[in-house]
Length: 303
Image 1 (cartoon, rainbow, N blue to C red):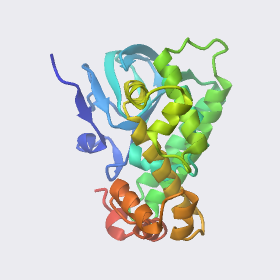
Image 2 (image 1 turned 90 degrees about the vertical axis):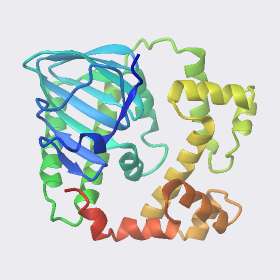
Image 3 (image 1 turned 180 degrees about the horizontal axis):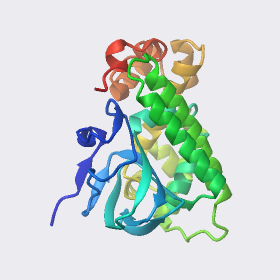
């Protein structure tokens, strides 16, 4: 039996039919030369696919879905994908975004969080003609901007467009929520309760035991359930929310680093700085400076 292969944007950069921004973003509409995996593969990125013609059957975390004309499918980082079949006339548009790129785009932790639950539960949604046209317009505009390799703000422009596209997709999903929702497993229910709890309290409480106590569970039981449902430990979820909020405040507020440290209830600014650097590879000051004054070597690292 084959091990599950891990694939990310860096893996597929060799294909000439794609346009890229580093290892964070890829956009393409010609899949003729691009291998769609006939065996389970873990994609370490989010992929948005709009079927324009023909049909394709894929498995997402072992559950089969069919794409036909007008169907949008959104997959999340770390999900296991497999192509089952594809018609000869299948065409579509594809946008692939790394998890880090998504983290950098989100303006606040909570705003788009419900979207990811919707996608996990219902990765495919059928678009009406107006919605289809809107997604195609985003695709065309993104493709044009990504090709402008001499624009020093190409990455930032792309991030802004991706943020708008996520809101557009959120609106589509909200309008297409099924009236009868599937019955969740106990572990899925625990996970959603855990996420609701941490989105309310992550600034003040970062202990897994705190949330386990609130849910009348042991920390070990909670961590096991969260890991099985999401692929991330409870501690990783808490840390990711804290760091994402810190990034948002560093990028979009005038708060000082000390004020951000206080806002997120770190013991002191030094501890905040060490934690932030551990998760991002740079200090809060470096992250803020890079957000506002992108260095050329990062802007043009895409050839």
